[in-house]
Image 1 (cartoon, rainbow, N blue to C red):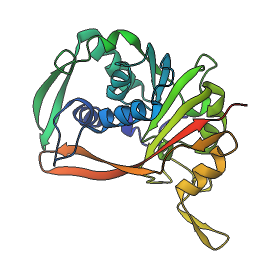
Image 2 (image 1 turned 180 degrees about the vertical axis):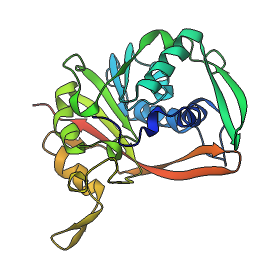
Image 3 (image 1 turned 90 degrees about the vertical axis):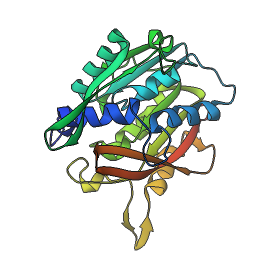
Image 4 (image 1 turned 90 degrees about the horizontal axis):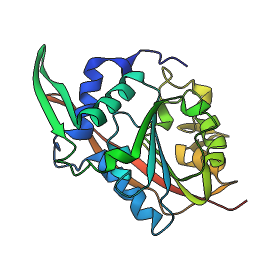
Length: 252
């Protein structure tokens, strides 16, 4: 399926995401892609760490952070532009980008993987373009699947949720983080997981996650919010919160 606006193929968006993943911390908030990986590793709590899948990997920081601990991590994103950049970062050992400042003004940034302590991890990752709702059969046997800020940008999130168990080992984890910002330009309203009235009562995205995942997963911990800041320009920032839920796949 093609993105309705081409938003994630735009060079300005690419630069903003590179800053989000590899750049400075803004307004006192920690690096979200790294925090997400750290939360997943804490939840694994001694479970097997052979293979992980970072689905909706964007420009790859979480994939790399997971590879500090896993034997192999696949990063998959729908955007070919993002995946090309991921591969370039691995090849060059650095993220290089023109950060938007004001109007047509930019500043040129470079962040080395060595400085971030990720040079060794880079040897254990692979990046692929793919559709989260129609992943190929090769994506399976994972101890962890992580979907960061993804589900509210899928055209059929229920399909993703109702089939993802096929790709996770028994007692493996599914980690989902999302601000639940449902928009019809990405997800038809009839496909929203929550954020509407059902039988006259408020029905949240968490309710939708529980209904779709409970046949094969159990919610491991109480949901919690992770803050994140996306820098658009020198004077404009998006400050948001993503709800983190961690699910353990129950044995068949």
